[in-house]
Length: 278
Image (cartoon, rainbow, N blue to C red; front, top):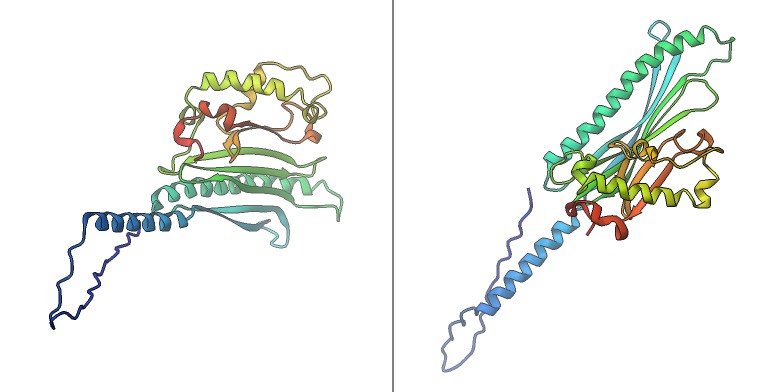
């Protein structure tokens, strides 16, 4: 509930000694009343602005052990808890926090399956060469204001292969409602967005910073837009609209994850006005 400040104005009575009588205080003028109201509104607004939206990340670790051998760790599960606070809107915050809580549970269920695979895998490993499987889930806040809350999610797992497997996604929420935003809800027209992103992507991939990371035989194809522009691989940063391209779409594992930022200054009109930064 918003805190409302009530400013009580006390009239100061000046006692004038004239013929031994006191003059009654002059009534407050309309200008004085309006000035007091403006000061009250400004003070209330200032206090509301001071109440910032926060996204708190807490590191957690779990060791998932064999049910028959309590000393045998099969899976290390490292993750972060997300706690969003929206002053004056606990309902929306609770809805957003619930989404991240479900992700943690979903990953824990995945770990249960990994435990079975790890136990079977261990049977084929030489004595002393066993290392537990690893599963991780971490987050980063890209933008949090009175319009949107946008979070980057990084997932990885390692099951003893040549390298870990990684995947990145984005989750963006309407701050007022707590509802997760899909592309069709966040943007004015997804077809216009697709056309703009296709042109933007083609030009970006000509830059040296990207060219050296692409597959050796890479050729631009418009179908790449559908692989990159999905409901789970975008977010809003302070600078623009960001699309995520995960491994093996444009380049090998060594190339890592690509990100493409379309600046608000050039492409902001594609976004619904309600979600543009102030």
